[in-house]
Image (tube, rainbow, N blue to C red; front, side):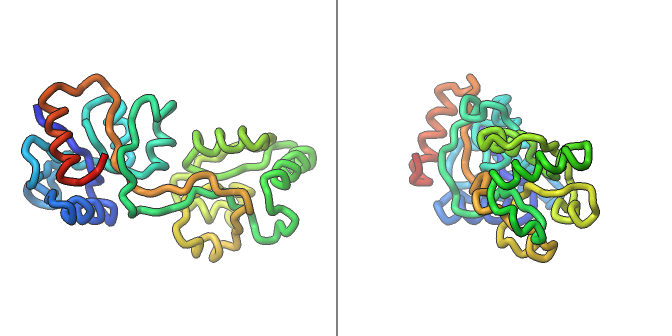
Length: 231
């Protein structure tokens, strides 16, 4: 049985992932054309490369259909309830850095903390008759974060597109989204709350906790860890 390693199938994450493994003596690549989702692995015997979208990798790990996977910390925590019981974080990879943050309009000059946001949310509902809307695609992470901060009287609005534009388009009053440099937030006249960092994310190597490991895949994993100098 081959040890299955899932990595992002396209874009900068795939390129960075290939570079990270290559720099440590394990060459990853597509088996054929760029349209194929099978891959090849040179440097360690018994490893099968599976190319998937970054969003698919957490579910495939949790289900045990792959043994290892590279994806964002934010993806794992958002996609999987009780994520640390279903996968183990093996190694942060030092690329794909992005912060999940809560941001409000610049003109909310008196709103700088989560306590301020909570007060505004209560006043907003009293005035408008509905809850303050926060646009995000990270419902699990944001709900848990705001619950821990005792923020209430809000509703999450699903946003799968340009989340930063929802405030300008009047479909939300605030947002929670991933940002790398903050430039897009600034361009859309949004500002991160002082205590609004939900998660500092980066790409990481994860291992399934599903009961799919046999003596062969454990041995292959041991050999791979030795070559990569991790664990």
